[in-house]
Image 1: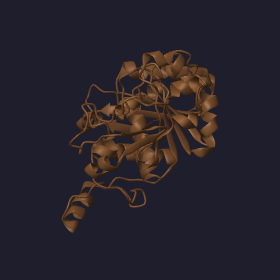
Image 2: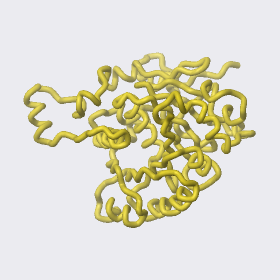
Image 3: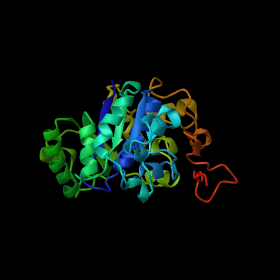
Length: 310
C-alpha cells in the first residue's frame, strides 16, 4: 500500500510545486521508488506548466467528474515518475468533485510506493480535500513569520483530520539575519524542520527550461538539498561530501564530478543535462509531450505543446 503524502503550504508563492516536483523526481530516479505525483490544485494548476504540459487530453478534472479512470490520466516522466496533471482550462472546473480525491487515489495505491499530492495553498476546499486524501503531510514554507504562522493554522486542521505531519521544508533560505532560523520555526510550529532548501537562481532557470532543478543542474546547491530530503523521506543514509573530499576527488580524476552522491543512490543512466533533455518525454493517452525539446531546430514557439485534435 502506498504512502500518500500531501505537500502543503499555508500560502502561495513559497515554492510548494517546485518542492513536490523535485522531490518526486529524486525519489523516482535516484532512489528507484515507484512514485506518482498528482496536481490537486485544480483551480489554479501549475504542475503541468512546470513540465511543459500545456495541454493534456486526460486530466485529474475528468477523473473527478467521473468521465475516466485515474489510470487513464497518468503520464510517464523521466526516471520512472508518473504524473497526473490538472487541466489549465477554466471550463474544465465544471462538475469537478474534489471530495472524491481519496476514492480515486485508492485505485492506484497498490501500484505505487509513494503518492505525492501537490495540494492547493491555504485552507480552501481543494486544500482540505488533499489533506483528507493523504495519510501524511509535508509542509513547505519560507523562513518568514507570515508564511510560518500559516503552518500553525494548518496544523490545527491536520490534527483534526488525524494525519501525520512529517515535518517542514524551509524553502528559499538565504541565511540572512532577518530570516527565521530552523530552531525558531520549530519553536513556533512545534513541527520539526527536516530540510532547508537554499535560494538558488538555477531554480528560476529550470522553470524556464521546464525541467526539475535536479535534472537541469544536478550539482546545484538546491539539487543536493533535494537529494538529502529524499534520502530522509525513505530512510536512506546520505551525507554530502566535504569540500576537502570534493577537492581530492577533483585532483584524483582530473575532472569535475557531476554529483557527489553515493553510487548506490545515483542511477546508472544519469547523464548530462542536455542528454536528459533529449531523452525525457511524457507518454499518456493519445499524446507524447516533450518536456523540453531544446535541441530541436524546428521546435514550436511554445515547447512541448501538442495541439488538441480539431
